[in-house]
Image (cartoon, rainbow, N blue to C red; front, side):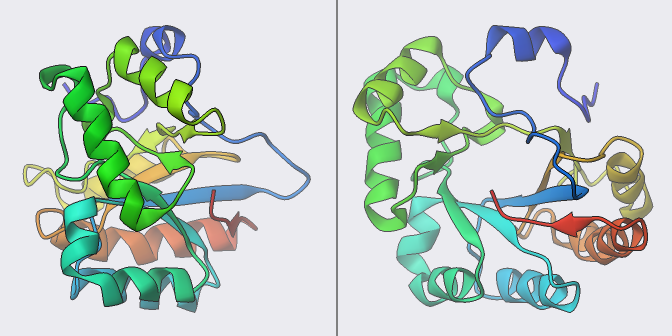
Length: 206
């Protein structure tokens, strides 16, 4: 079962996570991209975003930042924000808390951000507690809508519909700048930007 929008129960269990942004006097969408940077895919995402004067947030894997530092620097140079996504995309539910926290800390030595998104959205209460203790200003970011762009059972049209049927003002939308998600993401993203632009939305980074 695909939960394009997180269940109310899940949001109740994790109230400290950021699920959406407050509404303002300007309709705003917050695009996010997980699992990069990738030296071929991420620059293409940046080109598309630039066409729509859109800013986004890239939740980066520490190992990828280490391998592709120029791509990581390009993201920041283009005016986008960056966040941590662990060092090796660890699943918090399957990882010992100390190991998980050390992965986050190792990644953030390269990323230097107060934003963190748990891979798969999976994190234990013990891991949350340790991370907040180490950094009281940390913002752990979830999402309002997840595009499921990595799911090869879905078409680009499916991914596009996942977003436009579920995201409104203040929504945090999750895409992926990864090989697995590439075909769906690169087709759906420009259409999403066009759709919301025509409706008067702007696109900001977190």
